[in-house]
Image (cartoon, rainbow, N blue to C red; front, side, top):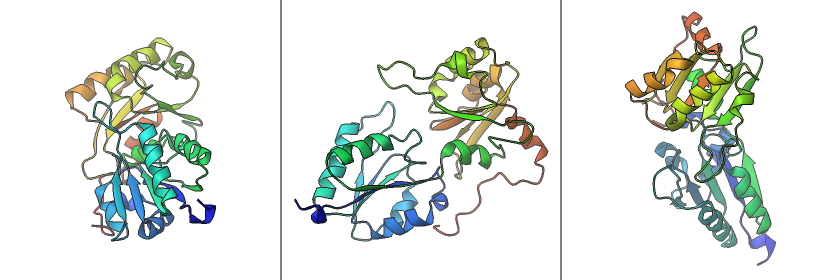
Length: 260
């Protein structure tokens, strides 16, 4: 097939949950796309921005649920592009922050498919902010690390918890709720004080947001008692306590006036 006949795939970050946190460029591309391949973390309201005649293809992956493999997702993107379609691959958060966007770009490149990455608002920054937690704060936290709490089935843990425990001021952990007891224990064992302020935030930036704030050593039990669901972001660091001084900051989800 001539390269001019091959469609382009746009990897668009859908943001952390609230559909109004999609970027303007992302919204423009959604309105123009001939096919939208979206994942499990994409808010359904965003699909209303798609062109009325666009093919909407669900290719979501959720832990513990039957879902397409990454190879199947790659193959679908390649097939749609080879059919000459303009494709938006709509991914929660930012495609390149624990979104496997790099794997998809690599597969598209190997197949000769042109692709473009449209950054999105990542949950690791936006979700704590929705609770009034800055991941950095002058005088409190000058460094932050984003780490995965989900190494993948049958894979070794890529995070050296013994090294990272005290290497940075703020830890933001993605996909770690099911391993929270183990993670907290390993951080404390490696020198992070059990009294360190910490938080777990689920469904961040949406009207169903839930959260619990507790010392690191008590966080897992607090999250269990509160029945915090997945997906959730874990924040560990003194910045969590800063929210107490932000007395006029509204942290409730605001009405979704633009898309709602």
